[in-house]
Image: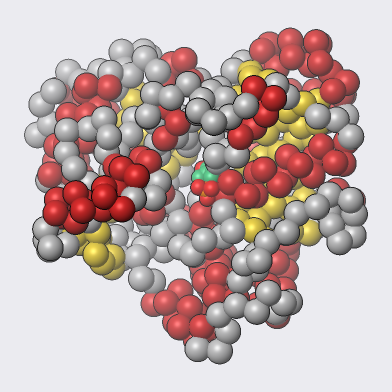
Length: 424
Ligand SMILES: *Cc1c(COP(=O)(O)O)cnc(C)c1O
């Protein structure tokens, strides 16, 4: 079947024809291709069109599509073990690997998505501190749990929804919103609600309002405010973990969060998530402690095997990060040069292998307000131009574009060549 026929029929059976909103290209001028196959840095649609993939499943496919070792780990495992709902050695392997290779994680709890990881980490922070309020930042996205759907990033902005219908006021009264990279906005909240704040949750390198790295000084001050008011600091590294560096954003900044959430890369492309941190806090989780959180599929053997194969390969080959960094830097430099030559108003933010070209006249993009100054019409034209020329980039201004280890110099040159012929 043709792409459009499949998409149209899908709309009869799945709302919008998709299982996650941003895939529907709702505010864009093209329809989504129906993807059939992926190999390395390339994906192919049902009509046989080839794309250089800079979405990489929104981050997880950092090793490229159908990595041989990951595929083998999945095949070998599922021949004997699909699901038991019982302890397995595979979950020990992955948990031990994570605890021994990243900092500040003594123990982890496996879950099935980033949403589950962040909502559970916040519940744990509340259970541990005995306080109810949380601080999140405008434009940061922490999944679709009710308490986070206030000024959230990612598809929540793209769809133009202020939050979401179906979220009772009661669910968000404990969510206090501060501005990213603006320490005064955080101080003001602490001055007013200091004794009631269980935690701050933040993407230390934001990716869901486009890429916006936090300023180091800002994160340091947040850390000391949390210490002063006995609130926990949660780094949501669902996107940045194992991406901006193997040890994540916390290693780049040298800041110690109390809890960290992971997903995306850590599942090797299968549904996965985890949250972890200090032993003293993690031991408050059921069955050891009073904070209840469970999951029929959590720690699924096939997922654990895919995650383990992915993380060990990344850990054992630091040069993979150097490769991606070098290529992404080349992309950043090239984009800026071309934008200047062609008179396109644009700011480029990058951290490691995550990058976003913001189509704005502003000089820099440091928070959600800045990101929202982008011209949606230019983005839409840019996106159509890129995808129709075989470059698959994130279909929203408020998302990151990702590199994987299989991208080559030629792939980046092709990206730039296509961008060069973009007229807005
Ligand atoms: C993707 C993402 C989530 C949500 O993860 P899902 O697996 O989609 O539920 C949460 N936080 C951040 C920072 C993310 O990038």
